[in-house]
Image (cartoon, rainbow, N blue to C red; front, side, top):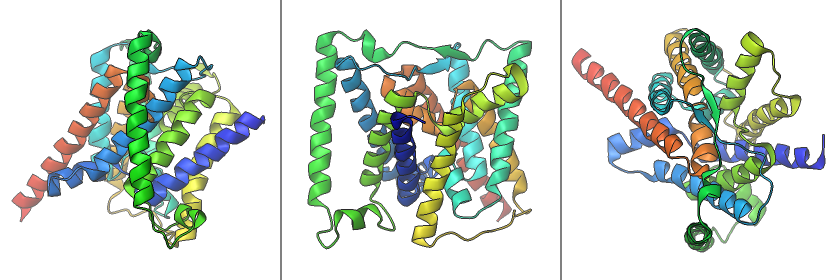
Length: 329
């Protein structure tokens, strides 16, 4: 393992720790909007994407070699359909890609069913792909590289001004009674602070490792296991394991870990939800973590459309579930 690999491991650990402390979840974001007409959780995801986007823009502007290559579906409407399916699955499951691992790190072993079903969903779509679906993966040129110098500098400047404002606001809101280390290991993060850590760490990871997210890893690994036998490499596996270790460390440190055996009362939701998430993740490709932290920061409009479809899928299922409950009452 090289020094850069070690840095990548440290960054992924930080992402896992921060995601757990901030309790970031796209399903929670949509529920907050439906219940309270508030969007603080959703805005935190937008901020995370903005931080990562700023770093990607700076890297390209200064000509730094970027290992990451954005990958989207060759047929744009299938990528958007994938986002909708993933959103439906996340709502049924009761958690998005990040939240699934967060709940597993807190001891909810039922989420293992979600991950197994996710792999099954990916395998199902790839089987259809081999039969008649268009080829799923299509590497794209970084849209940052397609901008004129004036457009590039303008967008980076706007993002930089926003970042400075965000840092000033966070500095003003800091708890003066806590040291920097105490704020870093606080039981809960402000959403804006969690977004900062996720976005910056992910932006650096895109430079070092490319599409590092665990949903993309599961997609590629499923393809390796059942189809082409091409390994994703042991470093990627270490990164995914480190993401979980970061969340687990947060859970133990906060005292929220409590092992629970699989709940057979809701296993159907985990299996169906995970299968739909995997099916959608194979089409996008990747989950909401990939869209927010990797693809949207590359200025991919298709990724943005897929994320909007993902939000719509979550909202659609949540409204159906609520209407069914009202009818039963």
